[in-house]
Amino acid sequence: MPPTPPTDDELNTMIRARLASIGIDLDELPATTDPVTGTPSLDSVLSSLRGFMRSTVPTLAAFQLPGPEGTDPDQADALSQQGPPPSLYPSILTAWTES
Image 1 (cartoon, helix red, strand yellow):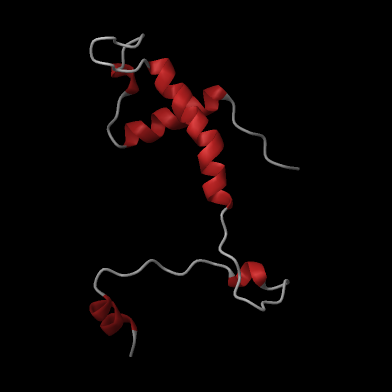
Image 2: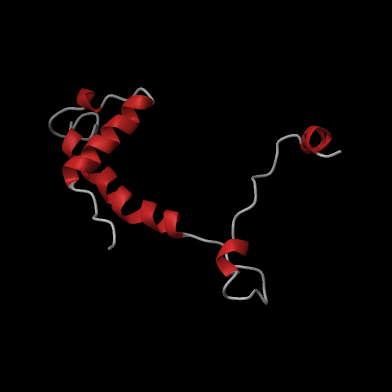
C-alpha cells in the first residue's frame, strides 16, 4: 500500500518545526501581505512551502543514479548508489583512512 500524502496541517507542523529548529519564527509574519515592504503573509509563505514540499522534495527523493553500463538488471539498484561527497582535504583523508 503506498504511503498517504500528508495533509496541509501535517505539512504546516513539519514546516514550522523545521524552521523553528534553525531559529525562524513564522509567527512574526503579518496576517496580510505588507504592500510597503513586500513582506509576505503567513498563509502565503506556508502555501508556497507546502507546494515545494509536495512537488520538488519527492522528485529529489526519488532520484537514483543509473547503474554502470552492462549491469545485470537484478543488481542495478545496488550498484547505482551514490558515492561519498568529495572531501575538502583529500590528502589528509587518504592519510587517515588508507594504510
